[in-house]
Image 1: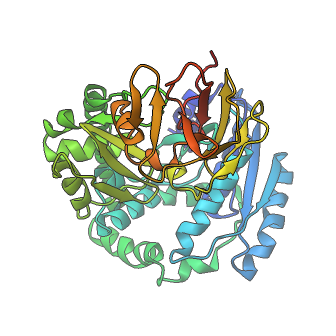
Image 2: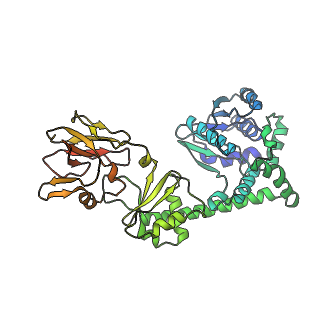
Image 3: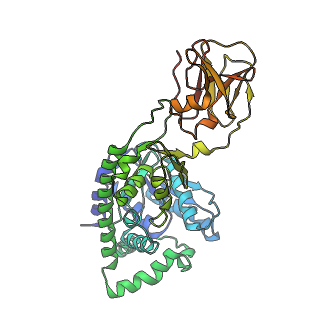
Amino acid sequence: MSLESAVLARLAAWRDAPLWRVAYSGGLDSCVLLHLLARAAQHHELPPIRAVHVHHGLQAAAEGWPAHCRQLCDELGVALDVQYVQVAPGASLERAAREARYAAFAGLMVPGEVLLLAQHQDDQAETLLYRLLRGAGVSGLAAMAHSRRLGPGHAVRPLLDVPRKTLEAYAASQGLRWVEDPSNGDTGFARNFLRQDILPRLAAHWPAASAVLARAAAHQAEAQALLQELAEIDLQRSRRRLAVSWLNIPCLDLPALRQLSEARQRNVLRHWLGDQTRMPDSRHWQGWTDLRDAAPDGTPLWRLESGELRRHGDRLLWLGAGWHTPWSSHEQPWPTVRQPLELPGNGVVRLVGQVPDGRLSIGYRQGGEVLDVPGRGRRDLKRLLQEAGVPEFIRPRLPLLRRDGQVVAVANLPLDPAIGELHWQFSTLVRPVPPG
């Protein structure tokens, strides 16, 4: 099978896309992919093709790369988008550049579009070795996927089964010219060390080393797919809702999780939180064990990169970054009660129904508050919140309506029909309460 036929077969599922964007760095791999697709479009019915070059500005040699890319695109009759990005400083320049690049790609795409990436079989073998040496689990050892979601579209790698030598042969046969990134020769970078020093030595002993390693990555990808299926089964069995209807907080049943083996617990938590936060490797799960096994009256939490897990009774709750943004707990006058009141860092409140007389303000718990509840007499606010099932971590930021300094209403808890209901909406984490 020719290289063109192999690539088009890999892209068969994406032939109805509104646009194929080719990530075009100017290097050998992306030159071959762009050239091959542009030529294939002359005798196959393909989606429109457009190239995109991301300019990181990290080295002087790169200043001429956009012009090089434009020259080939002009020859092929392919439109080119050049995206200039700023790479955030940090410990890993490679990672920061990759994140900036993919953010630029995602920002261009519209629903249904496909971004075509030119990583090949040797890149896959390199990625597997790199992640293996970093102690990755099954998901990491699956290396690069043939396709994945990217923004409103998909990223697809049609060359992932193709060895680099095949791309080199195609480039030579077509007289293609490409740029060489000077940093690729710096073996101080881990990936360059593997590419320049390790993989060639492996190939000297095992000529099919790259193909075998890429096949091992495919096996890991299959195993990961099975783990995800198992995680989804466990997740459906343990997913719950809080008894507090107006709180939109992801929640699992802790007793159901405890019935699973520890490996399955980790598997379902990774699956549940995969889109919310970066999860730690297997050596750093003591926080989960401490939270899971804490005494019933404890208030344990497990802090993760983008939020934290907490317990509320027999429920496990995920609190994302929204709950940790700075907010002001100072009392705030509310002179125009018929209009919603913006609370600094804490959403919006509005009063529906009867407006009480007196000087009104929005404040927060200080401790010891007591309310007059019709038919129940004077009730301690702490007890009322406990009865309503409001989690402890919500209580400090739950808005209170004060009249002349006295609490007369609590957000989202209808207590006195003679006083309007105080509705609080905190982003998407607190559901809006319909009026009336």
